[in-house]
Amino acid sequence: MSLSYALLGLLAVAPASGYELTREFEGDLGRYAWQAGHTSIYPELAKLAGRDLVHVTHEGARGAKTYDITPAGREELRAWLLRPPSEGASVRNEQVLRMFLLSALEPADQRVLLTRIAERTAAAAAELHDVMHREHGDGPRAGFGLLAAEYGRRQYEAVHGWAVWALTQLPAQESAHT
Amino acid sequence: MSLSYALLGLLAVAPASGYELTREFEGDLGRYAWQAGHTSIYPELAKLAGRDLVHVTHEGARGAKTYDITPAGREELRAWLLRPPSEGASVRNEQVLRMFLLSALEPADQRVLLTRIAERTAAAAAELHDVMHREHGDGPRAGFGLLAAEYGRRQYEAVHGWAVWALTQLPAQESAHT
DNA sequence: GTTCGACATGTCAATAGTGACATGTCGACA
DNA sequence: TGTCGACATGTCACTATTGACATGTCGAAC
Image 1: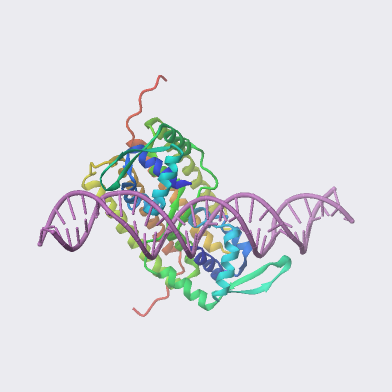
Image 2: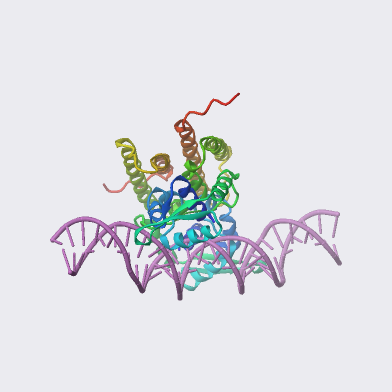
């Protein structure tokens, strides 16, 4: 399961509690790569601990458990990351699905939707650009976030470019009365 | 559930049997947008028929059932496509996850992985470019496929650009003995 | 005439993931 | 001191999805 590798990957960078990991998934990681809520994260951590891929290093206030990756976990993670791209890699993206189904709409609706996509993606790309250039906040996982942010920015830019191009491919719009 | 909209979207373009729909998911649709196998498609079609969003128009050889979308189904699909981008849109992409976890690897491994990604994405983009320019095969759903192919091509190109950029961000490589 | 591969649909058990619910702690502020 | 919000973990029922298994048909090639 990919979730287990996501957790191993996060813990490989720095030890963290289930709660902190959960919040990690609320950011770019969950937005672009893999979603998960605490209800899947906590049981998964327990399973990983059972397989000795992670272990609890510290129990803090409010029952917080800090997990760290074990050498075996690191091994497992590295093998997965370097494994040749599996054919059955799982993909599921609702926004992309919408774009694929575009031709199910009437041309006028297509135009509306593409225009909206073009606007949103341009705004999102610009925002990420700003965030990255204002300051690369030197908090924990800063390097991690920089690559991810740039990835996101390029994705938005690509979709923006596509939407603009797709608009030109649409049958010429009926000259409305305005 | 997104699968139901994917099916409605496909049927809105042209009537099809469960088998034909299944093969649709083996192409770009399943590769970039939403995965599904026949074991989820057949039951889902039955459910949609129960809600009168699709109906069987024809029973052909080998028990094949041709489904078509109903006006109610078209309505439902249009509403979903034009609905403002839902916050909770589901995202799950194993390849992207690998990229997010890059910093869990040692620099040497990172370089290997990024180089491999750069190569694969360049090849994939070139292949899509070729396919699109050789002939836009005028089979059914040709227009559908063109937009999707261009989308895929731009995605690959964006990831390629990112991988090349990311390589420049890596700490300068140790001068190996070669 | 038979055999094989693509066509075509399905069930069922197991796994993965979500949402609702439940519980309790710690620090800050009024 | 009490109350509220963020911290922190968990269960459980339900839904979605997958993989293994099962069944049968049609056309073509041998």
